[in-house]
Image (cartoon, rainbow, N blue to C red):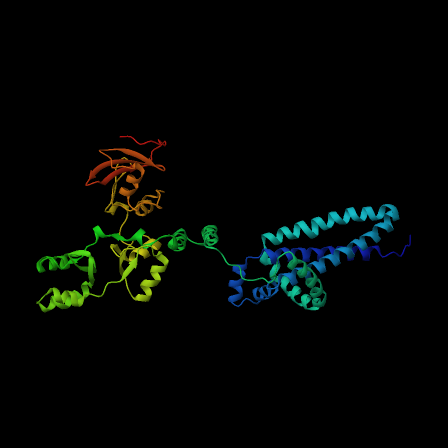
Length: 427
């Protein structure tokens, strides 16, 4: 063996190559693991580092090709140098085997597992600084990268992969819900609930949130003028439908602000009321809420008449009703609800006309909403008959006891969640 063998120099070069291998390995993981949405946000805000990473990721095939070319070249060179050093110290027979074993362990620990794990946990700390080196290196090695990509992309096309660019990643609605949930403390609970409510608007139709026709307060022109004026003066609503005899014969919507015009003149006639009423705005009952909210905006309306497929009036829907689906009730809470009455024993007496969705929102229950819209309809659907008297049943994990039946309608029921499920119906 030669005494002038540059062992120190080769060993230093080997350590440098292992460090470079770690750089390429961590760069690959950091670039591929970085949060694209945060990256695009920073790039849009003018962060030059983020913009550089976006450019590199626009063609992931070129980026990966360049990183792997550099990594494989360095690893092969490191293997050759390690073999030379091992042969010098351990001989030609056992040297290559020792070099292979020791270098494999060194690369695995220092160039693969450790840097890649760190890059996966802190991708921005790796990707941003690495982009300063990777971008000019890509230009330098472009001919070789182009050749490698041409061959690899051809093989990908044979496998059915036609696009290799880093196109925009689109989130589905369910994926966006997951993103909002996983935001944790970054988004306050109140704001999370609002965002999730917005995402749910397309699953809810106007029919789910409308005021049913039997609860609609309006002006019937068949009534006497004195009754009409009393209704106008005592109304708690700012807009009233004007109809003749039956709400299906609706004429228009009267804004009480406009009613002040004929009230101030002192000579009130039904013709004056009709003249001040605005033509009605009709809404199909199956319209999704997110669509109807845009329609209200386009039509410059705040209230609409909900009709079924035959044109019969089903009820009223307002812009406020839709907004309450997003932000919650504006002026009422559970204790002030007109249809839900909390009891001292933890149960609730609920009127049969109460909407299932209103009950679920107010009490945090999960009564089914894909069928009947009211508690009365839900009870009758499960009983499959009109009860002859008081009865009890269990729907999901909610126990219901019918308290009052009138005109073939369940007018009230006591509801609570029992400690143990008793899946039966008793009379």
